[in-house]
Length: 236
Image 1 (spheres, rainbow, N blue to C red):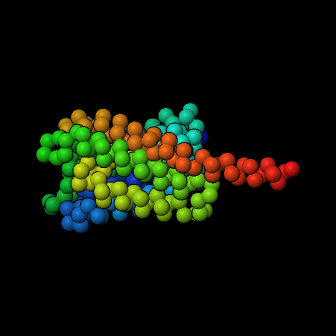
Image 2 (cartoon, rainbow, N blue to C red):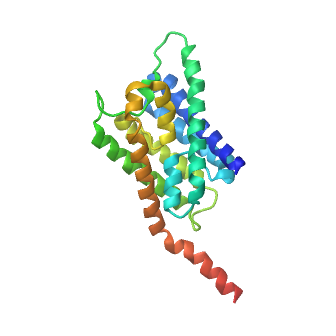
């Protein structure tokens, strides 16, 4: 299992690298589109690179959703989530160092790129609602494109593009978490309101992930049974 956990660490490290690099340095001039594409492309790349080793979760909400969908063993969930959180924090630590050495310029800080609610932003209820909805849809996409009858080899593309879409939708509202490991990584270095808001960005995405997993399990139940029945007929 060590290779699986290593793959999850590396994949989440890459995802949070995309978040931090794009949001801290590119977003002030390129806008939210740069962040959305950086995150989506990072997951697409790492799903192809290490997805065959660990399944390419890189996200506690995805892990929880796949458990709910019956696609992942529940006893592996906690080690996966720990690897994801550590990978995310490690990436954020790298960019905390880089930001501390950055020349004077119009850069964002870790508070600005963290997931928060209240203050001058959207209040708790709409932030929670969008995080639940977009994470449920994201996990539903994952369950659907990895089902036995989905076209082989295209799942990472669909997942990466879906992540771009959901970030474009959610960044103006919640800074687009969908991922408690990502939220934890930036909150550790953002402090203050980011840490105060962090509980919501664990509960809402995981709840959304479980909802998406259960819907996906229901939608694709017949497709899981189909190939098994075919094999049995051939044996007879």
